Image (tube, rainbow, N blue to C red):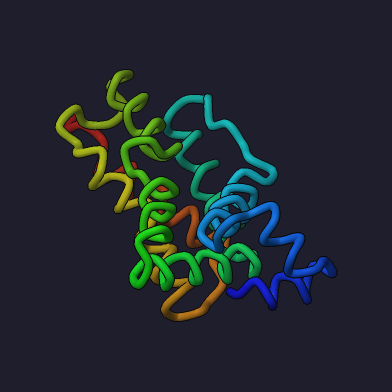
Length: 160
């Protein structure tokens, strides 16, 4: 991810990029934010159904090669540059994420265990698909979405 490459791909001059975005971290943040919220859905239904919809949306995003490329660049650059690390922390706040909101609503309504740690729950949601898509480079299927949904509901449901 470089300003030269972005200028070439977008058809604008480097000076235009630098004039509008003072540093690459600011530009990356804006691009990633746009990708994260493109065709964004609100998951306001019952927590069980909202979780399924969130997983399907998350799989769709990870299956998008542009989203994945920017995600990988952001992760890699955040390990070497404090500005990118700040963007990374803001983009992936486990407590402010849509998944965290679904988990909290599920806890409030009694569908999910009250003792479920929200941060761990978010990790349980994102880790399997991140591993599949970024490490194995395999697409995420609707069957895998359903399987993860069932596994999470089983693990998070209060005892009968």
